Length: 442
Ligand SMILES: Cc1ncc(COP(=O)(O)O)c(C=O)c1O
Image (tube, rainbow, N blue to C red; front, side, top):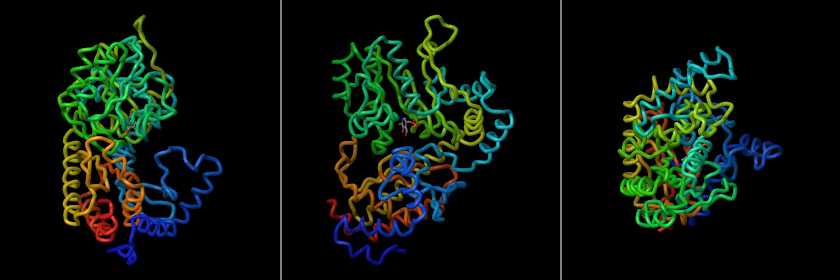
């Protein structure tokens, strides 16, 4: 059912977005009050930039299964899935039980524990390029360690990354290199541009320590890399002794052996994060025995890798339960096949309304883009107006669906076929209301 009888009368995209925003504000007084009071002690009332959107974000009170409830009592089907970290949903029993059991054995033990070796073993079994693995506390840290290890091992300084990529808060290129990035010497290439990237690698071969790339650009718009592009990176980095890093912090969920397993490519290092900690703070990096064994503390020429909480028992136990009992290879196949089907159904709705809108992504990672122009690189969607993204985001929010402002969704295991049916219906209803103004996008 249409959420507003005025929606179809809007004559411009900005007017439609303002109309939806006004309804959002009046529906969320407690979230608004929380936002204002939080701003007294945190910049912008926020401790994680991505969670802010205007006019203010709904504050989440609790989660269960695939549902979250905000402070004003609205219940949403959670299609954000904590930017892929929430793969298990909010209350997976096997994970909750593993955390309770670990807790009963005490925290901050200050020594190696039984859990970490088991999680390492599971990850080495699961991901073909990972012969040895190390844990840390976030995907950002994992990528910094990959780059640090590459620089230490090669004795070179420069790092090649791709415009539009996000490898964490200190290696962010979503709108050009971030000013708070780690101060490496960066060489920037264009994603899915094999010839341009090959040329840059050849020109800079003598100074490049690493090339870092996401097999599907997550924050950059859910854009899958062409296999030929990644294969060329593999070939050229090998030729020049450069360490190839696949950032699989998001994408390792897309196939049983991650994207590198699915594509049959073996990067030198792979970074991980998000769901692999079962919903507890997590990061990891692994790869070839030759490179990773440089971190062996019994080696005289070994490099250091530190982190007080690297082997914290809550994360390790939750991660083990997730991989052993829940996210089996079969379950990975099912989740991602479900995502591909959902994308096709949403595409069919778009085709029926014939509006400027498309879905990018692969498997359980999806992203709406309000435009017709095909997207192969981040620059292809850079011109999409903020008002269109806001209209879609708040429009679906008011219909009970939680997703990112940029249109990003990641599926969790507890989402059901009935949830997907409801999302398709709500999206259809949204387009019914707004097809007229969206058509202005051309
Ligand atoms: C591809 C990618 N790499 C790295 C990171 C950073 O991970 P974390 O937020 O755990 O530091 C993210 C986070 O969204 C990511 O999407």
